[in-house]
Image (cartoon, rainbow, N blue to C red; front, top):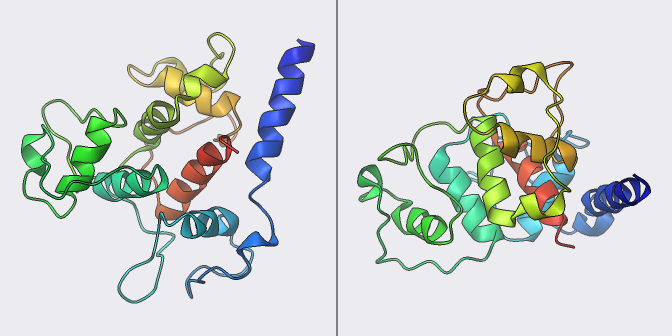
Length: 203
């Protein structure tokens, strides 16, 4: 138990370590207001080259993120090699703006798609985001045993419960009261928070 508490403390310190003034010189987005709850996470990703904003220089923190956009953020933060001629195995992603990126994250084992497709323009929900992060960062290796289920709406989940529990155990994700809301779609700000916290565990 003592070792588990110490380990949790180390993980918490790692997650908090990116919340500093080190982003003072980072490009700022006009639509990310000062002291926005995800400000540090967003600029952590900017500093890592994972996000650049849209053609108007905006980040759009409240916009729901698509699966292709999430894949792009992951490919960039993981520094995956992008082959512009590569094609993923997913039939619905052969002629998409993110085709090479989807191929890269599939090759890296980060994504597995949904059935026979990837649904690149579909919105990504919290449990799918959890799966993506656990696979990308091998987060299952950072917990001891199988984490307990702490939220009622995860108890009856058919898929992804273990991945969500890992994020909760590591402090990457918190619920709201007694709920974790696995099927809730993720905004760009929420995705930034998820990814920045998971990535900071490498530090």
